[in-house]
Length: 406
Length: 233
Image 1 (cartoon, chains in turn cyan, brown):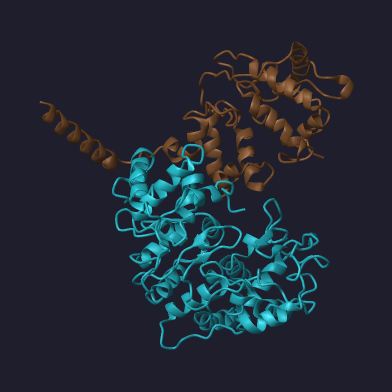
Image 2 (image 1 turned 45 degrees about the vertical axis):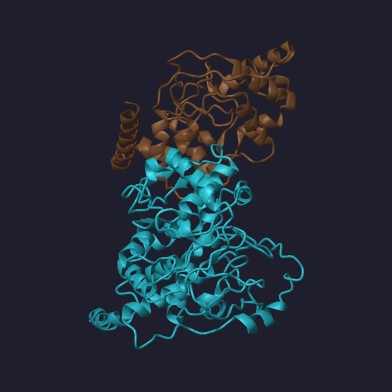
């Protein structure tokens, strides 16, 4: 009888929750995946969530802590209040300020209920003993007391407040993008104190140290994703590729570990929200080299020889196998870094449930000289409808030695 | 006449470009793994620069373990680490199976000139080992023909001098490791720099008959305990 009552109560309550009909642990696991916690809190050859992956920052390296319930080295002695305080305020169990390599600046938007579900899930994991290694922050950044003033200047604490004028899907998308997804932590520039720009929101930025450019996410006029449909956004997040481009570098990892596991409803909600980002002012490019037209001409020859077979002479790519380069956000982003690094390193699109046997691009670092690589990148940034700045052989040289995102 | 020939060339070029743009992308694994074959050869023959090893015919278990080692950071080579990072185990197995099943001739690579003493030392280490230093013969594990043993022990023949010496060196500098106990790390710790060069030179100079294949599983009994062979603690 009591069980029947429980079922009835559940039937009434279920539609109110953010995710329907998932038990609390599954919900916690889902939210932890949406937050991509494992990307930082699981070391490359480590136990899940046991920490130890080193997060590189311009101020030094910060090893991620152990989130398993080990009493001594993990969250074993933490309470749900402690966990919420860390997510919401960026304050640790022992009262110290956490460094913003941990994106509490975004996670502050997470609701208490979702925080509790994530904490319950983490507590259900096998405890792994894995003591923290010290960070290598340089002076003065290693003085945690500095965080007090940093927080005053750059941290807006507060759970996500739904906008009653917007749809339920929009609000869910905004909650995921601004909060757990912590998209703006990469898709925005950071100032010299490591604080992310929040205005304009998601306008693109260079990922510090890793040196990939996370493009502007506006789908409006002059936005980085201008011309994308909501279906393209969903496809990229779900499969790692879309008709408009392929996830590469750090975003490939985000797709593999996080977004491909999100429900279709949540992915659609994210797309609805991104669609509402405002148009951007017309891009003011860095000045072109004086001989950009000659360079692009030389690049066209390189393109015909090495690139056109897959990406097509008209830059439209080849169906599901090879992405279009025309109007591709990673080709036209302001710095040219993504195109340079992709030409040098090649790579596979991420293997996902939706694209389990991805096609790949050969690395051209041993085939093309700095001059030829700069020429072909300059060409694809000028060709078709693309109007991005040229790159120089020196730009290419700078990225020869860093093929990976690690 | 010359003019019409010019037009013909233009027309042919235009057709070639159109054909190139219109040609469908082959739905084959070989097409999908162009990133692998551009350096290792369409059949895994190995590259020409001395550092991109032959993959053809190596045991699939060994190949998959290497791909996973690049993912886990047990082997370090940035191009490879970046390449395999976004792939999953199922796909890595398919790629490994592809190269393991390729049967192509072994190429010979140039070997730096070696004094006869070094050649003799290389032959001794490969075929008999150095019992006084606790170094087993390469052949004791890698098979009497050095073609490897199914499913986990790689062949050592048909590899360039640079590649072999770089791999042995990387065990010493902790940039290559594998499941503990890492028997290769033990072996290499007992070799001198001159030993490494001698072994690499002798192996790289050894001609390999066509049709050489890894030995069947269980055909060798390794003298050391090796984690990769399921011989952990």
